[in-house]
Amino acid sequence: MATTLTQPNILLFVTDDHGQWASGLYGIRELVTPNLDRLAALGVVMENAFTPTPVCSPARASLLTGLTPSQHGVHDYIAMAFDRGPWLAGERTLPQLLQEAGYRTGFAGKWHMGNEDEPAPGIDSWFSVGSSYPLLHEGTREFCNQGRMEVFCGNTDEIIAEQATRFVNAEDERPFFLLVGLTATHGPWSGHPERLATLYRDATFGDIPVAESYPFGEQALESRSVDRRREREAQAQYYAAVSHVDEIVGRLVGAVDGAGKLDNSLVVYTSDHGLNCGHHGIWGKGNGTRPLNMVEESIRVPMIVKWPGVLRAGMRCRELVDHLDLFQTLAEAGQAKLPPGGNYAGRSMLPLFVDQQGDASWRDVQFGEYGTVRMARTRRHKLVQRHPSGPDGLFDLENDPRERRNLIDSASYQAVRIELSRSIKRHFDRYSRPGKSGTLGAGLPQHNMTEFWRV
Picture (tube, helix red, strand yellow):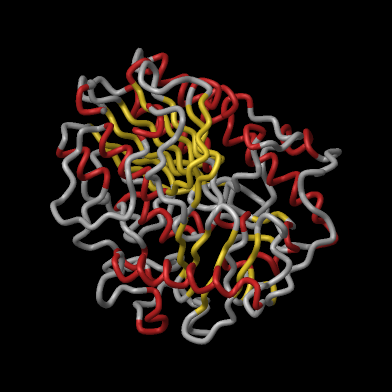
């Protein structure tokens, strides 16, 4: 489809920890997100978009390589002490492929895939806050770092937006690819612009279930750091973070428009993974519990795709899609040539946007993994397997949308369990590489000091 079109500019927003539920275009009532709403009204909303892994580094690596974590080998968040490892060495990333296709490529924000201080291959303009991001003072969103030529101090995401705007406004006739990695809505859930936090201090937060608990393990990491006596303030700060992201999205889309480039620009908004803000009694994502979880709020992400003159405005697609499909979509739109024999699990979504009735051949199972944990999810059922010895979980999302009843031992669900188990095996037998499978657990290179399979 896109190969007959002019290569579009590609503006890709990848925010941090923005759960799909936390947006008006997905049904929340109290959040103010006019720019995301407008982007959705002019583009396509993927109603069932997922992350390959509900934690930062592997999710981002999958989006930029088009590979599963069991192919590229990144299985958990990469802590600064392990940043210099050989992460993604030898992999062909989307920026590299687009650069080879004639694009001017840029990155501004949080990279979190190793080697933060050095430009990644394929990126012409590089501005990373990764090396200083962990040093942010508790309760603030300030970034302060002396670069080689400039000193940057101020709100982290405002600085990222400024650098991204510079890239957009550069005089260059080539199409551009720009990845904007905003640090919001990641914790700490404090210190966001007071003018935005004030909007939500009297909110009901009626879209967040109350009095829930997680019956399948213990709270961990971020979920143990939130003061449950001040949970409403943390929720107000999270909502403020979403609204701040919305403002920056509007500003950068406006910058592309002001540069006269918007009519030929493909704009995508997504997040690396989801987040719980009290859902299931959890704060955080897949590592907010021990054992690791695959609850819906952790794995579902927003995904909006806008391409004027190509995609029909106001369209909503119900197919199960993820970042592996987004990689294929952007590569096709940019006329990039994929490496031969790449063995990619994703498919371009562009045909879905043409056929408004959907694609009957599209997959009906969504897969996910987080280290030793693997998941297969249909529209109704979800199987979570924890290698090597469990505990496993099986959920009927139609009858139990809050995932409170584990049916793994239910006799009436054994046929479902067996079929989904076979699906997981077939999928990962095909989309894994020797030495990089998540089921290796402690046999993998170490990413951080809190890996579930080491503690």
